[in-house]
Image (cartoon, rainbow, N blue to C red):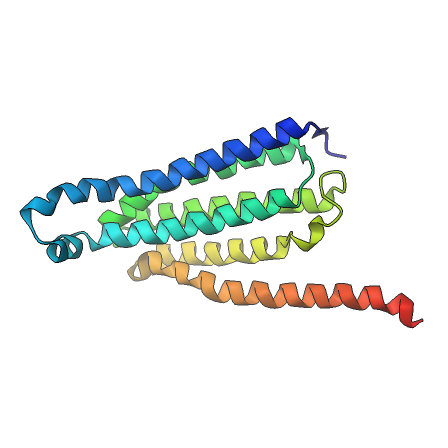
Length: 215
């Protein structure tokens, strides 16, 4: 059994520290736009936005990505009553990738035609997804970490599907660089697949619970 650290204060500190890191990362996404705003005195708002459309798009895309990543993190720790050393260490990997994303986002705002930049941006998100999936499976498999009603909140399959789609997007960005960061749109059908698998999983659970009554 994975050793656990069982103080409520320790769990609260882990969640609060993670939330603070995400909040700082989201704030850092805005800094390039603050710099752009200084140029408004020299040109109209329309011209300014047209000239820096990459920066604006990168902000909103990265904001949505970080928001979705935080929601997965929030759901995980809502289902968690304790944490293990493995979860603690992998959470730091998750936080490192979140903290690095504003840098990768700023690079992608400058160019979407550089293979290395696209790979760095998508690869950073893939690392975040992988670390989240590892934490989900670690909690899912250890009853000492999971709340009694926690299984309804956790969907490790969803994390695995998301990670696989990001790996495909990363490979696509490297070998077909014309697609650039738009390879991330693969997350849309990945969400459909995850939803379908989740519905099948819940249907299977309901069937297993009803079978003894029928007998």
